[in-house]
Length: 409
Ligand SMILES: Cc1cc2nc3c(=O)[nH]c(=O)nc-3n(C[C@H](O)[C@H](O)[C@H](O)COP(=O)(O)O)c2cc1C
Image (cartoon, rainbow, N blue to C red; front, side, top):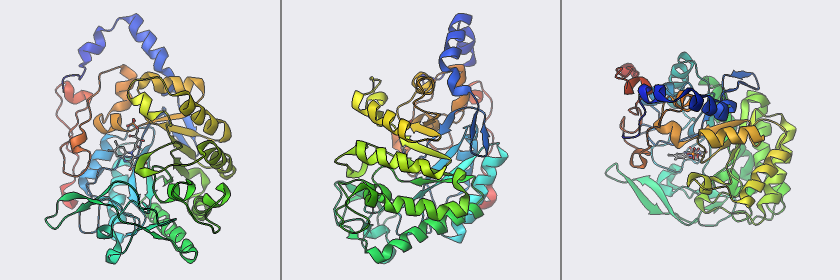
């Protein structure tokens, strides 16, 4: 923890330095009206899988309530990807929102966030082919738009209860008759999210998971109503949105996409045409927001200027989508504020920085140094690397607040 600022460091900044930092980052701290919510600033917490749900049953526990409540100063918390069904699970120990026990646990988590003054959406997730029979009901094959095997490995639990990587298998292509049942999985999860007292839902259509596998041409080889032209490849996404609208109302629904993303062996032959169309059509739904993973993520996280093609992609989505645009990926305070100032985004989501800094908005506002994130504790485990990243108050010597409710660990 060698780069943690103390309040003394902040106090020794000259008035001129402080003034210029404030003007540089001021756009991040302007309030924003998001559907029914008045956000005090523009710093959103991006969805972050932490793989700490309790087996059997993949139920999040009291530690998750503590972790999210610590981060309640986010303008909005987008919770970790949460499987809509057993079929939708792709990694060991990720939480679901399809069982009664899970809903009860989520309710305690949203309660802790609300008590701390925060807002929280549930990210609804079906992984499609990014799974393994070991994670599927009755060890069945994972499902996908087409039987195209992904490159890479699945993360499962072995016989000793440890996490391990195994090669992906060839998924089974969904029959057209099954499509309503896929939509029904999202509807049940969305209803459960109401029961769990979330403030809204984000449909995960990014990062090479099921909805993205339908959208992008590299994984969709179908020649029925769900494949071929972009209008057909995006059909499942729009069916899900239309099915969820009566449950949540459009302004409490967000959609996440990742144009030009490469995660999970995904690609599209013409991302401009595909995502230009998606952004245009999404505008018809008066959604709460569209959440885009920054196409220039790779360069920006390495401190480089965005690649012009990637920036063009981001601007295309911005121009085609008439509504609130959240962008995530590779931002610090300055670049986030710049994107807001340029009008390339309305809200900025931070992933790894929020993971490691529970009080990120205050740190960005003050220009305080940030805790470094530790990738070895991203997934699985307990408190270490989860609830023990210090706040600035702790850096000043205050005791951490006890936030784990032992009655339901
Ligand atoms: C540990 C970890 C877990 C993640 N889990 C999710 C997830 O559950 N859902 C999702 O859409 N993106 C997920 N992402 C991607 C982040 O939301 C975000 O887009 C990415 O980290 C880039 O933003 P950053 O540069 O601010 O970290 C994850 C990223 C990390 C590092």
